[in-house]
Length: 256
Length: 247
Ligand SMILES: Nc1ncnc2c1ncn2[C@@H]1O[C@H](COP(=O)(O)OP(=O)(O)OP(=O)(O)O)[C@@H](O)[C@H]1O
Ligand SMILES: [Mg+2]
Image 1 (cartoon, each protein chain N blue to C red):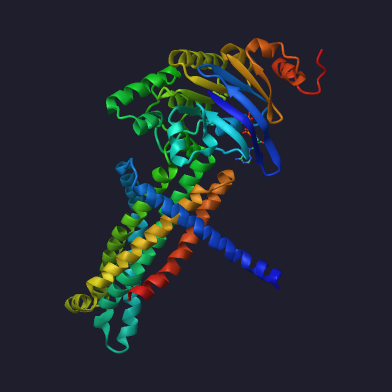
Image 2 (tube, chains in turn yellow, blue):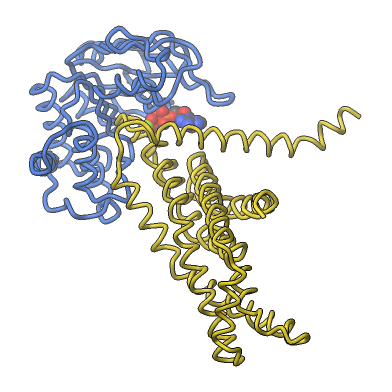
């Protein structure tokens, strides 16, 4: 029986252990954020990378999901003549859920995997050792700026996604399905509170934190040459994605 | 002075360093010889604190660096310059930025001065007009030399060279040997050089340490190594494969 528990429990112990090490890296990055030297240019460079890397895909997914949301809710609401609610539905789903989550997923795919691959390459090519050898702490130099960029850029990208998504919904609702433009917008103003947007952005900052810490962690502890780098990038995406969904549930439960 | 005392390092079941003792004199060039895979790079990584021994002590200027915390170790490392075996240039930076990196991080020199030093160091290693190139655009030998320029950028007190001339043509090898000798003479640095090249070894070394099966089996000036009675040392400096009959 004990043997069985040991056997069955092993994966969970493994996950807990890994979670602990991710937390340690996060704490260490936090501590290093408050220590000299402050390399603002490195942080800005990372923010730019995250933004530029992900903006296009974020725009495309946001517009499409806004349009799809408008279409789907239109068919639903038409059954009881509630077409005027299409705008508000689109806006609420986007700001609360779709905007933050889809943006985080897109950034994970683009910037997260890039973080893991880049840091992983540096690990296997001894460039991280070289940083240590030159008295530069790699957590401060590599991890901290990326985590900060993740936390700061995700809300920004999410605002853009919300806006573009609603525009997509407007196009479908008003231009294609002939919902009255005034009513469409009025319902949005009526139903979407500042709080919805704000909570969505908090969520997205949390997602940004999660995906950048996880991706940096995977990169930082890469072993096994080029193959290991590939593995690190894949695992970074998978683990970030799963973590984003799980944390989304808890964040939503707490917020709304 | 650098002293390794009874240093043992294992990777899994493989014992790479086996109670190794080594004293590296200050302000001289010490060459470490040994077969491929014998643990030469591992020794250098221990000296600069990138690896910690399973047992034993490593003294740099009297402090046992195996007992230091990260911050103290950071301070000790500021005296070091290191050329990695594969140069370990940062892929995301240009060659110029790579060489400038230690200067940017650890000095308050104005940009212009940094640029001047970078140009100077790159010229010393025989690389000109590559400041703007990315490391991936260089040949292996060029990368090695750029790594060398980065290692000496801060005029460190202790310089570790992991195979500085491997992969270079004979003329460039000669130039790099001369650079190491000149740099050492000018800055009075303590240099530790790993190489496979016997000719180069006798040209630059003040001391030679011979690594074999995890221990230093012979240490001394070039003459002592030349006249060593140890069969492995004899074979090594005559560049014979094991099993070949020495006569
Ligand atoms: N990080 C590591 N993990 C596991 N084993 C390692 C590690 N680093 C080195 N080794 C092992 O230690 C031994 C010595 O390696 P090292 O790189 O020091 O050799 P070397 O003497 O520098 O050889 P070369 O002349 O080919 O560079 C090798 O067998 C290597 O497999
Ligand atoms: Mg080596």
